Image (tube, rainbow, N blue to C red; front, side):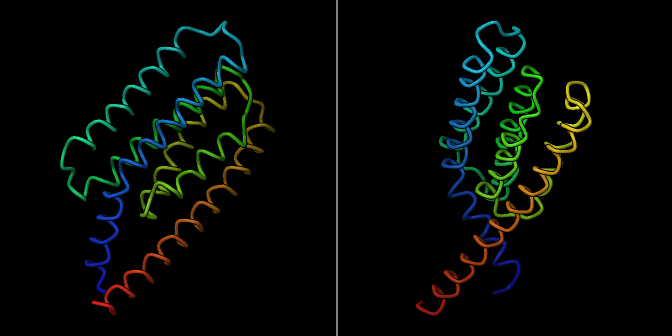
Length: 183
């Protein structure tokens, strides 16, 4: 299969999955937002409540948009990246409020990318952006040992995320090859 044809198939698959991906990321954000008062208590800074409400509203807005408009396939990856970034930013805000590294929480955000993207470029770019946004918050709230341990766990999660995404794409290649043989 030619590269251009393959890229069109990947874009079409990403577009088809876009509502499911965004609603999944929205549900994760809702659960993460509900987790903060459950773990920290109800004495939260007002900014975190407003911040999370804005991120939830933005993700919900993306969901409404992709369900109500005919989104061009070429926009599927950037829209997924935006929704994914909002979840990552929410995780960073949670870390700042708790002043706890939450390495596995952050690693789960990174690992979730493998289920969101069908593009290595967008997966790696999104992980890099979230990690770069995390660093200043981490420097202000965490110890050096906490930063290093979280980065190590995140690196393992990024490697797993990349492997899972590649496995998904290899399986899609097999399916598309079988489809072309049948047709």
